Structures are given as structure tokens and as C-alpha cells.
Image (cartoon, rainbow, N blue to C red; front, side, top):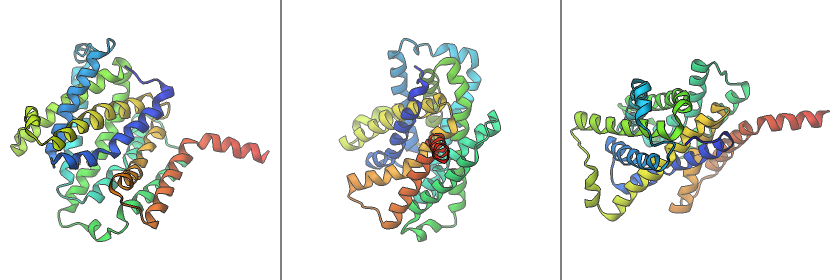
Length: 312
């Protein structure tokens, strides 16, 4: 299964929706820290394997490993195991606000990686809209919480982990694109997420002594168990396939990645709908700034031609 280019932006947008709702289901699961990533990627990777087995074009998971197994293992280790270990580990040191702000810079990292590795230089408009979107995200996430933002003496370690998560996740998105083109999106996402999940299980077990038993999900309370299932199947299996598959299929990967700037905006909307938590005036300004920046970037060529047409 490979996502057609015409559906790439829609796939990325659905992926962003999945990322934006992750925290809700993670909280309901009652699981915290690095263990959360283990549950997500063990169960989510298993879900991807089932999906691949249902698609005749993606069932052969052996051939890609024979042809470039070390490359796939490296992508799995850096792009999944280490990336998501860093994300959940960062929350042990930095505040949620700091981690959310730093990981929301992923589109900027994607643009930089695409520039360095593929020579695709971001245009001036991308730099400007990225700066405006980041300003909006900072306003959205720090409004009313400037004291919390300061954190404590361990904050620097958490910030470095969050930056590492954003950088490695973006590097994976750029490097996996040609591999997906050779073997198919579903096949490679399945392999990297499954192997990355096994890597997380081993790493968290060895480093923290926390050996997650997937079968123990049956012993958890119903709400926690269903939250873990949703976290795995929706927020991991479906979300990661559409997010990375959409980025790889998009004609302009950097532009497609800008949709990730909408993650905190979507999270704010979910808070209104499900928690009856309404935004402040400053947060409304931030939301307008972020969404406006994304809309300008996505429709820049159309806007430029419209302005030229009016001028003539």
C-alpha cells in the first residue's frame, strides 16, 4: 500500500489528528513514562503487521529485510525506539508545555533535514510562516503558565531530550521516503514500527527493569485497557502510517509537514469539546496565527497568482 500523491496532504492531516489526540488516551490508560511508548509500539506494530497481512501487495515483509535489512534496522532504532523513548523520558524532567512546544518544531526540522540531505532549500515564505506558526504555538502553550514554563534544575536535560525527539523523528521522515518508494509505504512502516517497538520493549526492560507483558492488558480496568487499544491502533497504527506515508507521498514534504503545526490547535479544540475548557483571548489570537500561517503556506502559489492577476 502506497498513498497516492493526490491524497498525501489529507493523509498527513489525519495523521496530525491522531498525534493531537494521543495525550488524551495516554492519560486515560493510567500508564506513564517510557512504558507508554512500549505499549503503543508493541500493540501498534502488531496492528500494522495484521494490516500488512490483509494487503496482498504488502504481505512480503522478508524481501525488504533481505535487500536492506541493516538500513531498516537503523531506521527502526533511531526513528522509533530512540525517538519515542526521548519523547516520554523528556516528560520526566521538562514540563508538558516545554516538551509540546519543542516537538511542535518538527516541520522546521523536516525542512532542515530535507535541505541538508536532498538539497531542497526551503523558500523565504516557508521561513516566515514557520516563524509565525512557532510564535503562535508559544503563545498557545505558555498562556497562563509562565511560572510552570521555567521548570526546575533538571529542565535542561528534558529540553535536550525533546529536541532530540523532534530532530530524530524528522530525520526518519526524510530518510524513510526512498525506502518506502522502493518497497511500499505500508510494508516499511510496518517493519520499522514493529522492530522499533521490540527495541523499546528491550531498552525499557533493560534500563528500567520494566518488562511490559502485552497479555496483561486483559487484567487492566476496562477504561485503561480500551484506552491502550485506541492508543495503539488509532494513535499509532493508523496515525503513523498516514503521517509518514503522507509525508513520503507529498510532492513537497516540507509543506506537508507544516500541518503538524496544527497539533496544539487541535488539542485546544479537543479540550473545548471533551473537557469544556475554553480558550483565553490570547489563546484565540495564537490559534488564528497558527492556522493562518499554515493556510498561507499551503495556498501560497494560488495566492501569489491571484495577487499577480489583480495587479495586471
